[in-house]
Amino acid sequence: MPTVSVLLPVHNAMPYLPEAVGSILGQDMADLELIALDDASTDGGRAYLDALGDPRVRVFHLPKRGLTRNLNVGLREARGVYVARMDADDVSMPSRLGAQRRHLDENPGVVAVGCQALEIDGEGRPTGPWHFPTGDLEIKLDLFRDVTPMVHPGVMFRSQTVLDLGGYDESFATAQDRDLWWRLADRGRFANLADELLLYRRHTGSVTGRKAEEQRRLTREMTWRSLAGFGLIDGEEQYRAFREVDDILAIGFLRRLEPGPVGVYVEVLDRMLAFLVDRCGADLGAARRHRRDRWRKLMRWGLTCRGASDLPRWGPLLRRLAPGEHRPDRLLGWGLEVAWRRLLRAGRPGPADPATGS
Image (cartoon, rainbow, N blue to C red; front, side):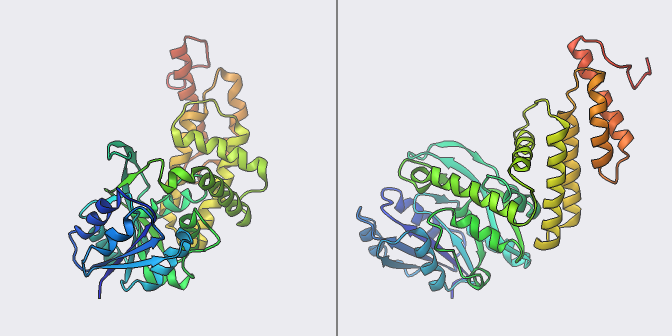
């Protein structure tokens, strides 16, 4: 019996299909099966799959009914302990499946493991890397944001765990992966390997290209529904304030922030971290480190003071929200020093230098 079953949905994927199939059959591990789920292809893909003649390949010719339903067919047919996803226009590196299987073998608490990816165009030319967080907490935090925490065709998960959840939710024509990650979140840990093990092809005929707007809409709806449903935000205005600060921190764009949105951001972040620790088994130490890192970035980018008159507005917020392991007065003092140095560089008068007292 194979250890890994690879689900490969196919719909008019020529001319990319042979490279995708070859990349799976050329893996450096032998005990795998490739389950090709043909969704009524009309471009020669059906004939190509039937002519493969490889005992590791099982082909299912299905009536046209969409990706999600076909994935559940493959999930029920899979014989492997682990199930890996693959798209018919992508390419897996030879070590991908072996590395992910070893990670799941060695980490029984991990329910799904992804990898880093390199995006390529229709001609196979690199267009840029996709970076994904490697830790469980950071991956689950990304479920609260409009970003991709794991690249679906680069993921391997425990078959029985997903079957116990009922498989993919067939009410989702797209974004079915994000829904599955949410339902898996309290069943165990997530991980992304640090290695680039997938070439993710983006072209006009890909699902991502054809349904990009629908995916974005569903992702936004799921993010909002999750935050509101779990009681982590108190309304749309609070959500907008959180997103404003979170987006600035994510892209590293230096911009003046106001105490109000920053206060909302830290309070919502604390609720999110508590939820992930209490309900989804996230590591408490990792949560504390993440909060400390966010706080330092806020101190670095938020205190873009134009003069001493700005500082009293930040003092109450700092004293109320400063992490318990730091003294608020020291944090405020460090913020004053940052503000002073910026004022000196700008050539404007400011408060006395806290380092010299003059």
